[in-house]
Length: 420
Image (tube, rainbow, N blue to C red; front, side):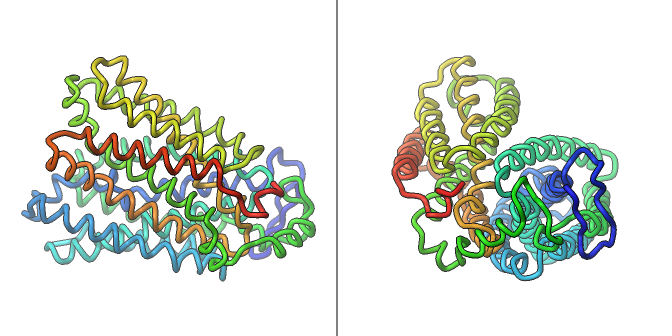
């Protein structure tokens, strides 16, 4: 493949053994890893020293965190529109730069008010805006092999999050939360020119063969088959994919945040909680690759339905766990469904609705998943308060997820999906 990005003036050599799209996959994985300071597990690395430094209580912080996550989710929608209007290269670079400045500002917070303002920006630019831009880097480029590309992306992302968490955790120990957060902000600013140089939107390129399909043919097909955001929102398919993937995010945020508490309630010791998290990660990695290949060859809705059924089964068996072996089976099923649903979320929108308004569509979808992730832990905690255990939440969510799986299995896909 020959690729000449219009804005850069340099030629991607024919002799190189990979297509440029795979460089985009690496860029996207770096960008998604860079969302760490805006994600719950990233903020969790500095929560305790931050609260001690600013003399704030946990209840206040929890409320600010929930509000900033919900309001920050709104960033995803306009960023998606900007991607469709100006391309991923410009938007990705701008969002990364703005996130870097916001993280630097948060590291200098001296009061609860300044912390709340900067957390809102970090949440909105990181978890929402940069996530949408990262997905668009790949989905705007790939077509036929989008599922495989998203599977590789998910694997790289897993290693990226693991490495970044370990690095930030070590930095907090040695430099304190302010020093660690300042270094993250500087790193984000340093990434900005790298994204500007290497990120590419396929629509910026000259005529070529991309992804094994002639550009002219792809452009003609997508100009007639792509859906507008209004058409997508009117489609039941959009909502079943959005609700199905959001249901997983709701479950995932709840069971990972309260993992230890849930297992202790089942009579297991705290040490098994670490093994469960390792199983979730390991099985999820395998599922990313396997399901990425399946997403490229089969109907995305069937993959979603199967994943939701597996998730529903795992939730249903949790209240019956009485041994470490059963807990590991539960973790394996959660990891399997999670790996598959992650690929579905990354790949579905291009497959089902085309490329024309892809950024906006992904932005709306990202908004729903962020809101679900914020609500998940609250539902789990409140369920335990009301009933005295997590059992009611698990059985209820199992039924909801199973019903979504049935709908996904029988719903008719958009006409565009039948061409893939």
